Every structure is written in C-alpha cells, then in structure tokens.
Image (cartoon, rainbow, N blue to C red; front, side, top):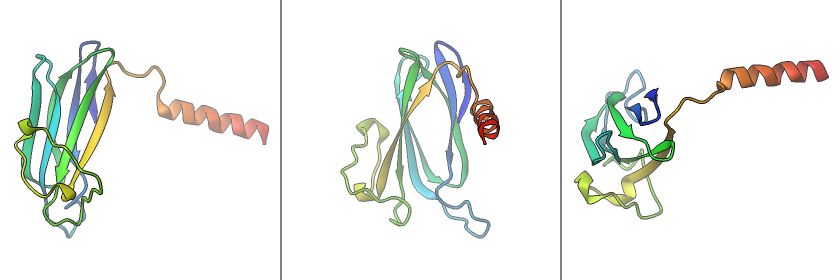
Length: 134
C-alpha cells in the first residue's frame, strides 16, 4: 500500500497476505523479492525469506514521468500458493532459488502524486445519481 507520495518519490509498504493469514495457520511464503528503483536512483531487489502473513517492509522508490514500477516476485516451495504456466523471469540481482513454476510475478505501477478524487466520493456520487433516476 502507498504510504506517501510526492513528485519525486513514492513510499510504499509490501505485505504478504497469501499464506498463513488464517487464525489456525502459521505457515509462511518461501520468499518474496521486491524489485524497484530506489529514491537514490539505484536498482534494488530486496529479498525476504520465510515470510509470514503481514507487513514485510516499507520502501521508497524514485519517480519517473509521474510513476514508479514495482515488481514483486513470490515463491512458495509447497506449490499450493503460486503456480505459473508461463516462465517467470526473476532478475539475477534478486538472488532467488526454486522451481519457477511455483513463482508468480506481480507488477504495480504506483502514481507519485495522490489522485484528486477518492474512490469513496465517486461511489457516493454514483449512488446518489441512481437514487434520483429510479
């Protein structure tokens, strides 16, 4: 989730919500790798192993043309959480191991400035409009 935004950087938190989040479950995802350009302009691939449910870490990324791209690679050795029919390319900088068929890639494009409208206000306006018509 996005923590803060300005024209130069966006700060975001990565959370693991795929495995171990049920009350009786105490398992973890084998690893997560988060790939992005840091606020200092360096390509970063931060890897966490045996990741339990919850917040993993907070990062700050550099913005270019109003956004930043964050790639998250997730792997679970059990093969019950992630499965990919396509070949997933994990950058060498991430120093990952494991069967690529049990790896998924998620790409997020984060805006560097807050949106002018919130989803809640838009939803309320639509609901009011529908009430007036019906």
